[in-house]
Amino acid sequence: MNLIALFLGLLLERVLTRLLHLRELRWFDSYFDWCFGKMTAVGRIFSIPLGILLVLLPCLPVFFIAIYFSPLLLGIPYVVFAALVLLFSLGPRDLGREVEDYCRALESGDVSTAEKTAKELLEAEAPPRADARERALEDAVFVQANNRLFGVIFWFMILGPMGAWLFRVLDLMRRRAQFEACRDGVVDFDEMVFLRATQRLHWLLAWVPARLLAVGYALAGSFEDAVADWRTYYQECSPHFFDSNEGVMACVGKGALGLGEGGDSQAQVNRLRAAMRLVNRTLFIWIAIVSVAVLFGWRL
Image 1: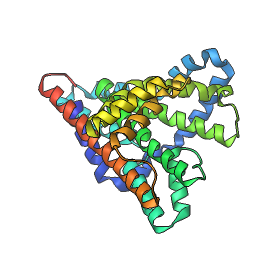
Image 2: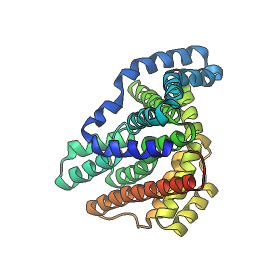
Image 3: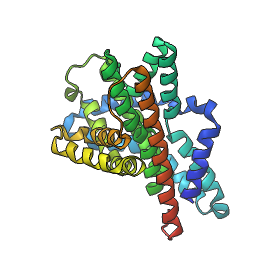
Image 4: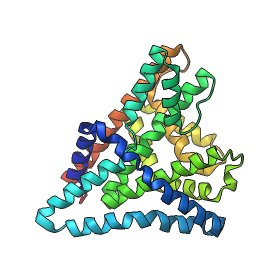
């Protein structure tokens, strides 16, 4: 049933593009701010266990509704409910549209729109230098693909609607924590208890889908280059272990593209569009693998 709900949810996302702004769930911000206060109050040691409980709390209604719907009417209410949960768990914005909006703004010379879109993709201010900005945006495409799409799909297939909603709530909490830290002008992010805790919880939940996504990038692009860059990354790995998810996806994704760096603005635009095409090919590979697994009798 989850496979049917997956197809339906992805289809709804493509059809209901005008309603995607509803997935930003701004009304969650007040809850997250309350959570951050509680996590700061208990200190660094207990912030992660408390964070787990606070993230699970808004997921419990989805869990119980899914259980209630599962045996009814041959599972049809469950499929509809799961597809709707998946629709609101993906995002919160459409990655392909944002990439295309940035590319068109860059091509037309619309600096303000390009800067605004770049900030959304990077979740931070874009680097002032053009070459550094384009490299950062290329990395962001591969990383945001997991945050907005593949991580949700992975946990949806593992835990059903609750899994998808769990990943989305945690990712929204991570984004809110990072926004609060940047707004407060914090120099040492490790000193912010709630930011440190949410980043580590997100790293834990994103670890497996990040590696599977990296494999998907390799299969969808230049396999040899992707594997070579993956191996090189671990040989020169940053000492910050909790940054490894983003580093692996960005490194393998760029290797899978098999394109050289540098060039004028049009070449940089072409690389971003190529990165998005690689993400889309990887999505097709994931769906094909899941479908084959179902055909061979795996219960998903």
